[in-house]
Image (cartoon, rainbow, N blue to C red; front, side, top):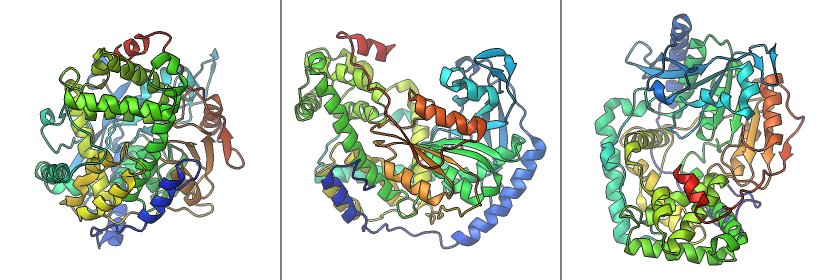
Amino acid sequence: MRAAALYPAAGALLLTTLSTAPAGGVPNAAAGSGVAAAGSGVAVAAARAAQEGIVFGPCPGAQELSAAMQCGTVTVPLDYARPDGRKIRLTVSRVRATQRDPHNSKRRVPRQGALVFNPGGPGASGLPFPMIGQLPAWKRIGAAYDLVGYDPRGVGRSAPLSCQEPRHFFKAPSPAPTHPSEAYKRERIAAAKAYARGCAERAGSALRHYNSLNNARDLDVVRAALGERQLTFMGASYGTYFGALYATLFPAHVRRMVFDAAVNPDPAQVWYRNNLDQSVAFESRWTDFREWIARHDDVYGLGATAERVLRSYERARARLAAEPAGGKVGPGQLQGAFLQAGYYDDFWPSRAEALSAYLKGDPEPLVQLASPAREAAAEAENANAVYTAVECNDAPWPTDFRVWDRDNTRLARVAPFETWDNVWLNLPCAYWPAPRQKPLDVRTGPGELPPTLILAAERDAAAPYDGALEMHRRLTGSVLVTERDSGTHGIAGGPNRCVNGHLEAYLLEGRLPVRRAACAPHAEPRPADRPGKAAARARS
């Protein structure tokens, strides 16, 4: 993405050069015929699902979920080109519409059907979503809609995918060099090759079927199983991408769609160049965070300028490299904790306080904040496996590490914070054993699709703002609502009343602004009132 409002000028100019990098890889030559055959398979699977419906009952692991929430399963083909072949089951969750006005309990609200949600990833579980109706910002929507979440294929309780033993997934403490040595690069290349082999060995021939097109097809089968003639859908982050694929494949099946934190659906961007752009955007958001810390130097003592805060951070990295905090937190864990703050600014106070305490001699807040949660290893490994499989399967990637090395060495000169970690996350795609697809050209013409709502924060790092602009251009009749000068990744139902007003007007009444609309940013987080307070909240 090259929006001047989002990125430093040097980074923007650099990405203009990087956009010419060869994508490499070999797309599936039979993509056109494969899509057509799969389309027939979707019709068959949807018809069966409509007839079978979903038998809802208690949810697995119900002790962790709301008593009002129920779960069931939907059967889909592993391969839509062979709808009578191997099947997998997707686990679906639901809380029924309350049909009660939250402001007047005596007033009944008409039910408008099911609102299906995907939180993105790829690899994130949507099962907990229906519980969001308990929050004040969602009560009006939960009154009118059955709130429906699900685990996409490969995730959680839906034919889970794995690429390595979960107990080996967390490696802590770990380094996170911003300018890695040649020896370190060789180590990571070997690890990426091993991970790709592990995915193939564990999934076998099924591996190629974990992709975004199948996620979009699965969504249509879920729609049919719910008894919905048309789909009302909200996707966040990656969920906007396969939501856009759905809109392109099944425009007549769309009732309303919300794209929150839209990613760039341009086939030339999916996924290698999107990741380059993301690294630049995280650098800008990292600067935003450091400037906020500097404005509160009286609280944290990390420096009165962004540059001085960076020196404090680098001092902590060096100290953790020499002696990991609690034996668990090295530079990699520190970087991971601060990367989360690039997604959500409500993480800023706890991260700033933990860094401040560590540099003043108290490592405990940082250990509590950044140590790997070993009990979550299986869930984290599963999410990473699905993320890798979907992104590697979706599109061509460079197969020569020299391309990655060239592009990211250049990029790290202006955007060192996230660049190389992004490489190591995605590098298995260079050695991927399954066929790569040619991405679908997301595009709808006038009258093909009902009006849709796109929500975007102007300084979103994980889904840079140019992606929302591109989505808006490609989905004719869509309306873009921007939260200005904000970087929260996903803004629906958050603290911004202006954004929520547009969301409610659309979902409840079908109303959209005539043109693009903008909302003022939500308030910045406030620093901890006294030392220890933010860290205590993070541990609770």
